[in-house]
Length: 96
Image (cartoon, rainbow, N blue to C red):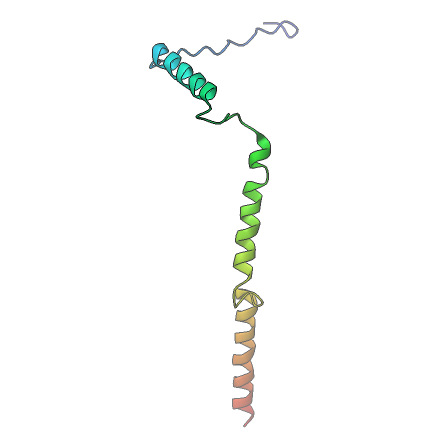
């Protein structure tokens, strides 16, 4: 095995085990007949149809999460305020 003449990798060849050619042919004929009769709209993939769908849902979910009653105070801020309040009460109690 030389450095300049590398062997080519084996090509991938997959023969499906369960494939019914007749069933596939009948489905294609039925689909073409539906398109010709106008019963089914053309369902070709168009990336513009789904562009931004996932990020839009995430933004909407985050906005919904932030719109609650405790949106101003996060859990860390609330804990800090409780600790300060407890320390203030202890200081007042001990100063009397």
